Image (cartoon, rainbow, N blue to C red; front, side, top):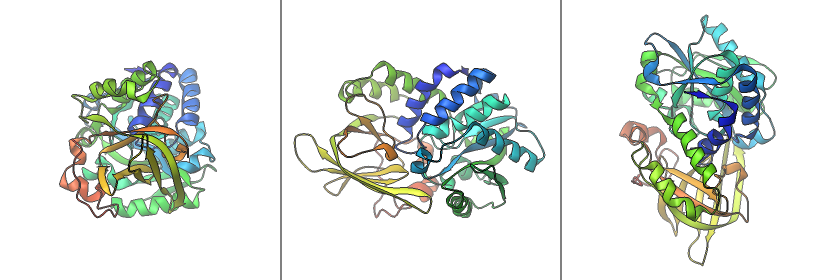
Length: 358
């Protein structure tokens, strides 16, 4: 499978859908990646199972508060510069690239690096959605240390990190992002092909592309696309996909705290009734109606524009928008006791037990 510039609109749409509000706005990364693909040719996408066991693989993406990415715009040099700095630090060339998350701009950063360096990108990622912290990647859950790693900021400053504990690493790398203007590119989780096969969630990049094409072909009222979305998710690692609310954004608050976008949104239902409150930490984490939990992390909470069915990043959610809220089941790998310990609702401070959407 190869991805060309003509595929990027669909890929961006699908990855924003799966990002559950996070992952960074894809617009500028999409333009930069399109230019790279036109200059260097389509990027090769490979299955994890096609990797040789001794291949040298790493994950690459952006770290920071998504609202910052609307002002601190990425450049073509950041992904390739970060990768070059990582290879120099490790003393060897990388054979294939993986994504942190299948979410928004962070789905395009590894594709950009792959195009500029003529490297394959792996069809998969470490979250099957977007999540805000490093220890929430399946690479970390599989016991692969996040370091040695490097960061690369908008000034071209490179920093090296050596911290095997993923929770401590998250604190360190987040502080680095804050001190570097709010957004950095990092290359981390060096692993062998054999390790990658056991850690990555396969097939998510190709599914995002398929999902994006569905959204492109069904632009229009979100109520009209609900059945098609439900069918698209049947038989996948996610399972059910269902609209759970419809209304208008009546309030939205957000601020950058410790390198994350933190806030909440209130949605007034069409036709009256109790509003829905959505809690945000980069991503949509919790949906409640009348203090009853309707959906929670690690299940996916997705907001679509009611009139166009376009997914809306949390940083672009605004007062007055008419929206539809969908819930999608999380992959099984994110619902194990070990995973829930580092990404379940209680980890985020919500005093509730996780109840799977499906």
